[in-house]
Image (tube, rainbow, N blue to C red; front, side, top):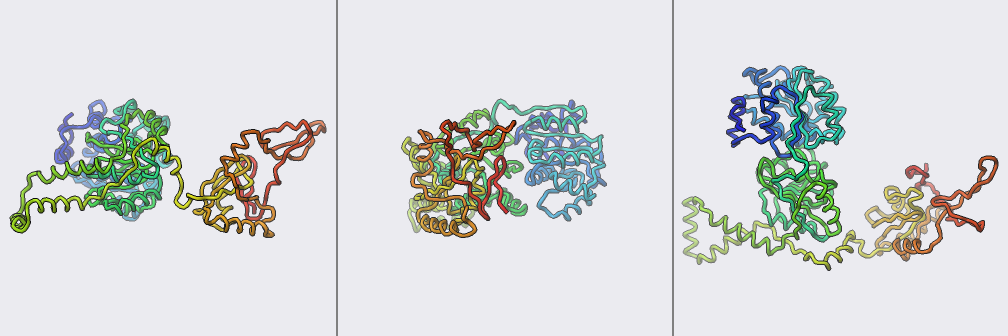
Amino acid sequence: MSFKSLPQPLAEALTDRGYESLTPVQAAVVDPEAAGRDLIVSAQTGSGKTVAFGAALAEDVLSHIRGTPLTERPLVLVIAPTRELAMQVSRELGWLYGKAGLRIATCVGGMDASKERRALRSGPAIVVGTPGRLRDHLERGSLDLSGLVGVVLDEADEMLDMGFRDDLEEILDAAPETRRTLLFSATMPPAIVRLAERFHSNALRLSLSSNDQSHGDIAYQAITVGPSEIENAVVNLLRFHEAESAICFCATRDSVRRLHATLQNRGFGVVALSGEHSQSERNQALQAMRDRRARVCVATDVAARGIDLPTLSLVIHVETPRDAETLQHRSGRTGRAGKKGTAAIIVPYNRRRRVEAMLRGAKIKAQWLDAPTPEAIRKKDHARLMEKLTTPVEYEDDDRAIAAELMERLPAEDIAAALVQAHRAKMPQPEELLANTPEARESAKGERKRPGFEDVVWFKMAVGRRQNAEPRWLLPLLCRRGHITRNEIGAIRIGQNESWFQIPRALSSKFAETLKRTSESDDAQDAIAIAESAEGPRIEARKNRHGAKPNVQAKPFRKGKGGAERGPFQRGRAAKDEAGKSSSLPPKSKSKGDFKAKKGGRAKKKS
């Protein structure tokens, strides 16, 4: 559909931006059937939603300002779930309404609230912000919603997932009932439907996304690697694709920090984006990507929504997404507005089944591949280099003079070789990877060991699941009793009535001596018993499965109804005791400073 029917300022802005026609979602919201109505729009990421709601409200906004760029009160309020998305929306509306001269104020957490208040007093026609900060300005009286002609809820499903329901309801309750409400959401869960029913009037439902198929502009690849070679696979994927911009998604801040340092050391232009970075640092990182000072962004899922980099053509899922929805939102950073993109999921051998199930659930067909080899990368480099060097270019006279002088001094072949060498020197070297063979997959089963825990000693303690044992309270207990740090404790395995943990062999003797010393102190005479386990949890668990007697703890008899005695009362599975005997555990330990487990509740510290 042509955009020539839009108001002149918007039509000119779209022409200058290179638009030839409207996308399906943009055409749907400006259709005569949608004029003046509330809208509930379901559309996939990257379909041009910002321009869509900007165009949908254009007639209402421009008719109110009547050629004057300043307004007494805001006319449009756009609410977005994240700071990045809000700022992205603000930039998009800035160029869309640039010919009309409208002012746009952005209100997001992490920025200077006093500057935002001054911006709100300067007469903006459009206010864009996150729910928490907008509610704060509303309650402080710096945001007047009485003149609104339209409210936009962008990524409404994400806002509800993030717990912004109360903020949204307070903001919408403060807006005039005569305003239009436009709700945009990638999915339509029941919570969104209920919100729409409460705040919409005679709403038109537009569904422009298909839940039966994946994003057609994104090519999915599943890259199988050994668990220890994930970072090397990332390096080779970045080198193989040589994308103009790429984003690597990790699950935690620590992972972002680690991978960012790795790629930086390899020579990539890389920035990091996670919850530990301030808003200013995030802005600088994204600006570096837009200016092409950096080509790779390492990020947590906080960046899965709201980032729009026009040149982004590669998304790498370094760590497996937690669910299909996260996979799609991460991947949706590429393949936007009709452009093609690639989403590569790095799959350790031991996680293949989980990823296959996730892809089936998301109805995504992925191509299963091995990580690019150095040979494959060199072939791609050769093709790219030949294309770049043979492309016709206009040279300056000074450059031609230097070239002529070089031709006099050196053979043409040496000059060409120096040019190739200079080109390759800018590129990080690819990594050698183990071949994806049955032997490699089998050996990878033993690779899941933390550095420093290749040689360990197992210790056992007399507390388990039936005593509500959990790593979060076992760790501080072990650190206190053994005078070690949590980083010096390896894997923890919790059984029914016992738990096992690893200590590096180099520290095991010192740890055992410290345990003996602390257990003999006056304050810990009755502490939880901890001792070295010669066989480890697997062998002991196997013995328990094959003929071991039930490990139960007898409790005293007590009177039942009518004065009859009943018992014994035992923890765990009831044990038949026809011979009149009862098996028992050592008495449950208690000590000052140690943790006491309560039946049916969390572990609590004894005061």
